[in-house]
Image (cartoon, rainbow, N blue to C red; front, side, top):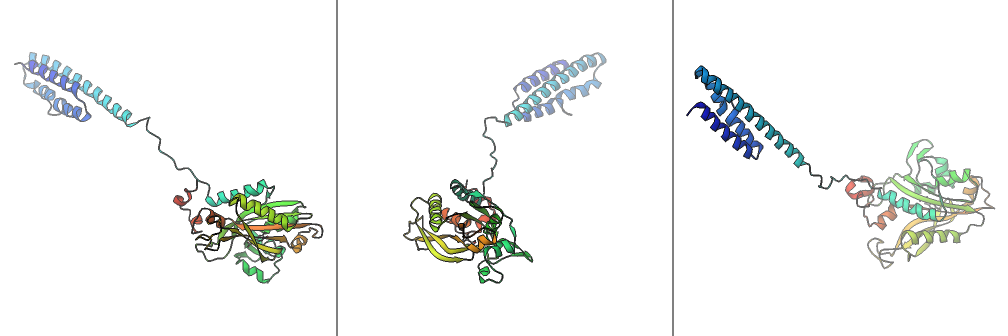
Length: 337
Ligand code: DAH
């Protein structure tokens, strides 16, 4: 059999196998088998030197043609496979990779809920600085220097006379000074106290105070506003208990307990089996506070109240550790969508 016959058989065999090849690996193997350094076509080309001149020319031409043909086919098919591979790795019908959206912090959600309710009752929002002067935080609110009531709030001082406000009540002193009655505001914000951090207290926390100053404001107005708030925030059937208390800036002063909205007053773990939960302080604004701000206390009276935000949030969502609010563990925070 002549070399040309050999060559044509090799070519036929290669063409058939290349056309049937169904993987990149197979194509690679065929490339080695036919066109590699020791490949079948390569061997024929190498053997040309031993052939007589006329045969050398014919075989050489045919072998080169075959090599080019196979090379083209292999390349084409390899390219086709590679493209298929990349296009098949992209499946447009697959659901997208979800991105984790942010969540409004639960304390801010509760703060907003509280503000929304009071806003619906006609209260405007007022804000004040976090770093306060001793005057607005204490003195204007009827805490004279060295007054023992200052011990109720363990204060962090920034420098002499500058402190981190211990409550949001100083916004009242600032606002009364610069506005004329009727005044009806709430003052949401962060406060700071030098407390030992525990499950129930933290050095930073939020409060909302509220103030109404006008002619003829009475304790009945205060009770009406707080009952309406508690019904909207906790539940329609909530009961309120006003316990006499003391704050330098209100007279008379009271603390408000609500009937436990979980056990409805029967007693449970949340209310420590008391049936009642303490939620805020309030009272009629002390005439001294009005006078300090230049408001005629003979003509005007006012009520005030102040509540923490973390505590109702803990109660409402049955969370047992206030520190969870500040650890910023997103697994905790994401639960409150
Ligand atoms: N500022 C008080 C506190 O942080 C809470 C408070 C009580 C605010 C009575 C008031 C109020 O406005 O009238 O303990």
